[in-house]
Amino acid sequence: MIAPATTMPPVLAALLARPVPAVMGILNVTPDSFSDGGNFDVPERALAHARAMIAAGADIIDIGAESTRPYGSQPVSADEEWQRLAPVLPALVGLGVPLSIDSMKASVTARALQAGVAIANDVWGLQRDPDMARVVAEHGAPVVVMHNRDSVDASLDIMADIVAFFARTLEIAAKAGIPDNRIILDPGIGFGKTPEQSMIALARGDELARFGLPVLVGASRKKFIATVVPSEPQQRLGGSLAAHLLAVRHGAKIIRAHDVAETVQALRVAAAIEDKR
Image (tube, rainbow, N blue to C red; front, side, top):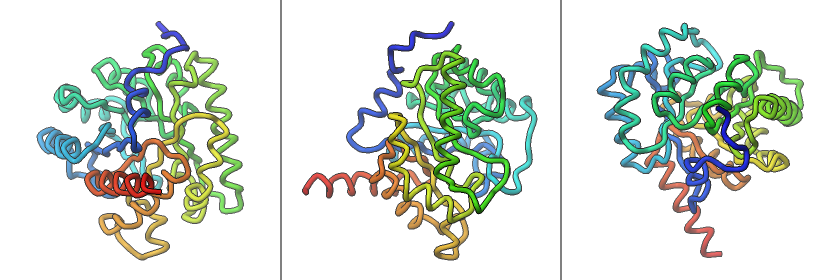
């Protein structure tokens, strides 16, 4: 049953009411994610890492079981993706912090929501799996919709492309019965973009305010950082923090990050300094 459109889900309302942007901690139970693949694909290690992120200040844990990195990832079946999730989900739900499911498959998202996950996170913005919008609507869940492209085109006006993409996503959502107050926009840093386009999306993030919806930004350890300062993923903390602080200045309400403690500290200190103006 599709829930009434008038009420923002309490989990999302609570996240957006925080005095500083919420931090979404990344938990990849995959063997091949770009910066931490294989680190947490054993349930005990995944659960320990989730607990550590919560202790460090994570407001949400985003769990993914298929690498969605924009280069070199190998697709997996829905069954395999669920087999990676099923052993760890019940314990994660029991931690008491909202979970989001990072999946592009409606069937996996549906099973995760039924298991107690609170938020859907679709890296194709409801535009890849034709059942995703229906699943989100039927569960009354908040959904993160990310801008993405099948291929990179350096000649694009990337902000115009992002705006047009989100307009299509919102049409799909409306037809499925997903109200605007359950939707979070993600400009998709590093996805279907050149490094320069990713930086443009960060620099012009305030242009997404036209939609009147909360924005999530995930620039953590992304490749564009290495085009400014050559570095491997694990060496990009400084660039990640810089990008996220600028994203918040431009209106981001949720930050998705690998390095939770450092991100929480940066956001809280920046907010405390701003309060002294």
